[in-house]
Length: 547
View 1 (tube, rainbow, N blue to C red):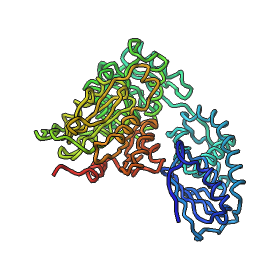
View 2 (cartoon, helix red, strand yellow):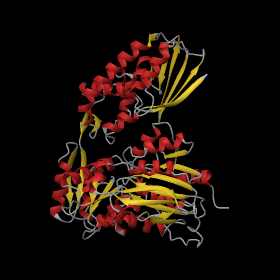
View 3 (cartoon, rainbow, N blue to C red):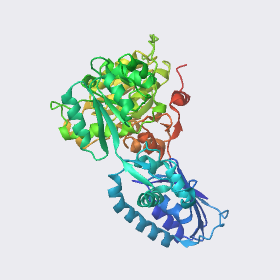
């Protein structure tokens, strides 16, 4: 006999389940899956006799790590085929009490640790392999002077308890130290260089290593200062932002600088955040910068927008911090070509829906690569919500740009409409989307603009869209897709979608410029992880093409 399901918020509690099987004196195997994390706990007569989590953790360490997982899938199988090769033989009560004690201790310590997660660890001395434990070597294997502390913790595979223990040990022994994220600020106006530098300097994990007044100055200082991330204005003399970006990513800008009588030792590249006034209206230059390899864009601070200056400062800091962790090996120019659409595209009403969850940092570039691959004859509508895109004007500019390069019709979800096959609808995060049926039996959507107060109070537009699609009886099929982005919005709705028998696909970490959102969804165990280059194939395999 076996039982399976989900654990986490609004689901079953892993601690309660272990206690239940212990009290029942059960013999069997509990399998845990939370994204990349997998583990097993073996019971004999209610006592725990063996446990393993991931490649490195076993016995008590493995159990404490699994108790710290916030959510995922479980499967318990009643079987006598259990592993008893270790000396572990403890009661469920002992394990749970110690696990809870460790979690409480970790929560207290982690409050201070969270403030350091933006900092970048680096090694300052070679401790010698003889003095390092296996776990020390695993942790140090990810300390490359580029990944921030949060990324090392999340990817080392040691689990939260062991990672914290190893980090404190290496720090106290002087083997590693933490440094700030080094930022180069580029703008042709001195006032804006001062404003942006000041906003970033309010966060303890940023160090402004320099400023530059145009593209030529930026490329020179890029080579000299080797920052972790660069903010870039688009409208500048001598060399504008687009040209600066292209020269940097090409790696051959030493030739350009020589023509200006500037010699450098070697070239250097780093992630780029466009901070520009033209970004306010998502002008063609902004979209060209994203296609040219920029990691993110954000508008310059303003006193005429609804956000307070403090909220704008926090948004800029968060965007620059996320961009600093982008792997430039994944950043490449997106080739676009003009497409002549088939006149029949977008005419026929749709009964199938592909729901796409994304965010601006990383997500826009994923959408710019994925949407042009969707065939015009796809037998479904595609509805995209970019949760932190706060302007319908931005959504409109983005939709118009992508539409010119796509076989499908790409439209802005700015008014109520019947859903059409071969059509992609782009919605911003400050809209509420509801699906329903018309009197003639066609599926449609209605959009309403949120007030400023509603947008601040309720910030889960993707979940709202997904849950509305589940409630709508007019769909024969739904598919969930999670692209690169930040935050947990979409996780609740996608979990409900799977419970209703639908498929969910998440973009893999390797192709994601910002893998936070797909990783959060993957950790629930509900999504199939797919490379971006194959995402459309998986979608079409589910919904089909118009025959």
